[in-house]
Image 1 (tube, helix red, strand yellow):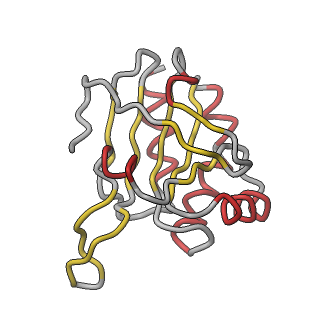
Image 2 (tube, rainbow, N blue to C red; image 1 turned 60 degrees about the vertical axis):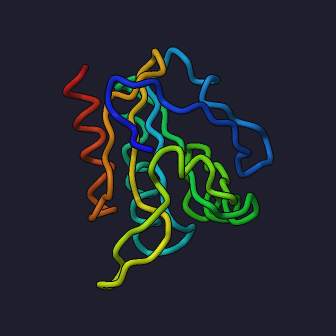
Image 3 (cartoon, rainbow, N blue to C red; image 1 turned 90 degrees about the vertical axis):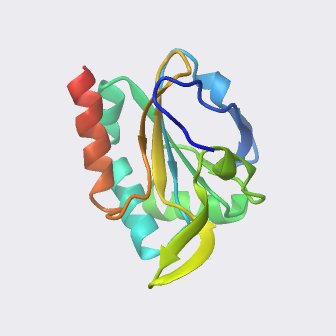
Length: 156
């Protein structure tokens, strides 16, 4: 399934690092940056999370919130969030249902081989629940949060 700008973002409800249910509809009226990443505490994923953390205040000033989603467990998310002082929720999608809806799980190239896995990507959902932008297949995780902030500020 593709997530095209102008279309309604697929609804979801997942548990966060504390076991609390979080639904996309809870954020109606806000810009929501949903970023999908493969695994807690790996190099690229840590750099991406730290980037969103370091730009958190500027992202908030731009009127947006950030949500991270990976297949990791709630316990793993708790450790990751605590270790890197992440100020945004991390949602657990162990069966990858939400990731599939957003095109963030499927066939990808890894080290020159086709494999099935999490496709690092980000979706910007507007206050009306419509997709504003979809960054598919992000190559440079460390640089990505700054690109998201830049897009938010351009809209501002």
